[in-house]
Length: 424
Image (cartoon, rainbow, N blue to C red; front, side):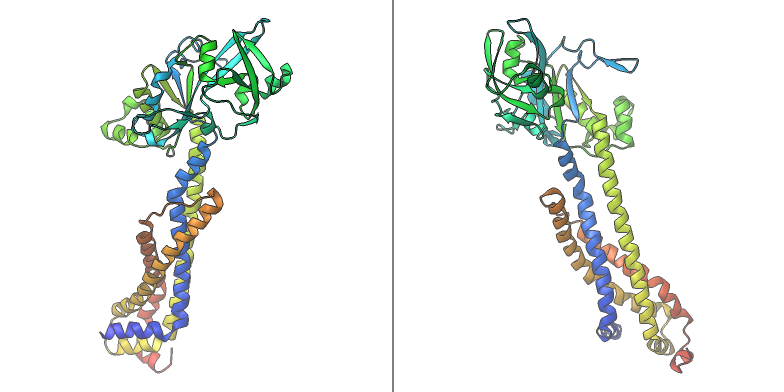
């Protein structure tokens, strides 16, 4: 009880010093909680933002995936000679990481001559099509989801349209075509509904519904490749090892890799489910995403460490001032038989009580700060990771503990007689 009264009197006896200690730890805790919440949530948010700029996995037929590199040029001699079955597309959403699949878009490409003998290159795809999945009967996917930066001058065409097409901007310019013109391909008269911008690979192509291109190329139910966009975690040594040879992993490594959303493990699972297909991770895209996420998370980690260091220095300075102010009290306690350790415990207890309160309030404030930051950066808020609150309080207590270590060394050197008689 006596110790409690001493602690209570010390806290209320010098409200300015304790208020400054509270403010120091509160601000540090707020920053730490905000950084931790952003660090835990920023990976998914950045991945989602980056996933709006295209695919990171391409699914090809086994023959189409065979490539040779000669003098720096990549050749795929069997590409176009084999196809994927359109009916098996739903397999992409039946893997272990099905919820990480943002969307996919099948493509069928080929060439056809018109009545005058001119050659046209066609590309058929889904634009915004409903693909019934076992647990998602209204699942929508297509190029609009994978490539939101595509824009159309004119009107988009429907996924079941057999008479309307889009033109790549360079094709329209070179052939002098405009919206409303018609083109005869095979026995079909096709109307130009719009000019597609943003599809670099399609600048010189006719872009149409997949069903229309299948009919024109006499490839019903076939696709030549599938572009897949998946949310993934940054690559590490394990995923790089698995990327080279999954068979080289031991049982524990394999289970860890398989049950982690690496782009390589997701591609591997797609290949398992989609018979006759070869899924290839586009590592340039994935590696770029990983580098961005890792650098942002490293930056936040550095900010957190600096906040801890700054707060510890601030607490050390305040504790040194407090010890100097209360040196007569320390001398009296020593004269009454108190040990340096018990005096140290008394002062640290005061700091820990302040840290417990300020750390809790600071952690709660940090959630709000992280929400505001996420709203400004991503346009929507983050989820709340409640594990961060006890972590923040723990950091606050460590700041108070370590911030008190150095100043408390002076307690040992204080002699009761010198202090009480004002000689020190």
